[in-house]
Structure formats: structure tokens, C-alpha cells
Image (cartoon, rainbow, N blue to C red; front, side, top):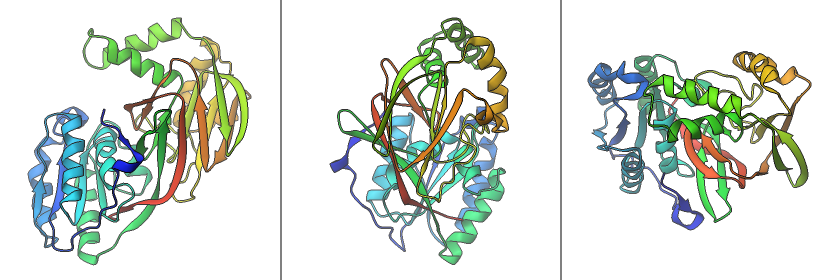
Length: 313
């Protein structure tokens, strides 16, 4: 994970004659869209600008390549992949005027779909091409989180800071089994250990302490490939949606979790929702996951930043 302090992120302006940089993750979505990349690049070339495919072997290299491309004056940046790929690219374009196109080609494509892009990657490329030709962009909000040490990260969809984050952290530490079964096993292990955690939550300066199992701070409604954890979140309203699932036991959690796909879990009496410009969140022993990517340890401060990125749609 790359992280920067507030002073490290310098504004960048797009170069009208510069190339369109493309960050592509060939392993996204278990590689099922890998064969489409040449066609995507061909279609992008019809927008009348050079196309530059960025080289990266690791997520850290991908993020660094995006930052370099933006600093060098690209006219736009595209991320072909899932939410993790988009998350890396957002670190480079957030807070700049460089237009951005998330092309959904991963297992989870929540930010792209929630901000209006077609779920089909080739159709999404056509939307980007039309926007490039017309010089059209659409501003949307991002969330900016800052750790206790001043390090900050941007995210587009949802920050998980409860059971789901704990499961991800467990799965990432496990060396066996490989693939989706590792995540399934991590769920079983953490369900057996389930207990509410004590959180300090400050909503626009108003503090409260509560015990919770699920905690999410959303700029967009969905995470995890379509789970509507923050169903009323709107990435154009300048606000964050906070959803807190309280003192769930194992049985209650397993009953509530399927309802997240429809967003009806917020009707449960143990679920509280909030809306705010700034959210401060603290708890012991929690590593957050933003856009599905391992991020900062609590405590963090999350701020809604209106129109922080300009999308090619």
C-alpha cells in the first residue's frame, strides 16, 4: 500500500494534446476480460488521441505509474479492471483536473457502475470515447481519509471498518487455501470469534460511543460486487453515508447479511444510519478496507470532497 501525506499530493492539469493513459489489470475478474484489451485500445484510439498502456507488475507499481502519468501531463487516465484497479488510479487523479474513466472488468465494479458506466467493459469504453471526442466530463465526489499519522488515501465507493474488514484481514494473512475458499474459511473463523467492538464515532463533530459489528462509510451505495451496504449514498451530494450494525450475534448477522444486496438491512432495529460531511472513526485493532483494498488502521477521519474527480461520461 502506497500512502502520502497531504503535502505530497500536488494538483495536476491535463494536457490537451497528451496521451490517454490506460492502467489495465489482466488478472481482474479472474482474467475473463483479458482478451478484450486489444479491442478496447483500438476503440480508444478512435477518439483521436495517442493511447499509452501503463506498465506495472504489482498494485504498488500500478499506483506509481498512474501518478507519474498524471504528473507527466496525460490528457486522461483510464483504469481497466475492478474496484482495486480503480482505487489505485484514483490516488493519482483525485483532486486534479485530469479526466478519469473506470472501465468495469473485475469481480467487483461498484464505483464504475454506481457512477453510471455500463457494466459491459466494451460499452463502457464507447462511453469514454464519446466523452473524449466531445470534451465532456461529469464531476463526482470522492472520500478522503486521513490516518492518525497524517497519511491520507482517497476512495470512491465504500470504506469497511467492521466485520467485513476483519474477514478481509484474516483472509489476507492466510496462506491456505487459495482462491475464494480462503475468504469463505476466513468468514467461518471470524464468525466463531464474533463479538461487537467498541467504536468512537464522531459525525460532523458530534461524538458518541457504540458497540457494533458492521461499520461502513459510503460515498457510493455498493461494495463487494453489488452489496448495497449504504443504499442511499449519492456520489454527487457532497455527503458521506454511514451505516452501523450494532450488537449482532452470529444468528442475527447471518440473517441480516443477505438483505444487504437489496439494501433492506437498514430497516433492522439494530442498524443505525447517518449522513455527514466529516466522519471520525476509532476502534482498537481494526484495519480498514477501502474499495476492497487494504487501507489505513483506525482511527481515521473521512471527509467528503465534492467534485473531486471528473469522469469521462
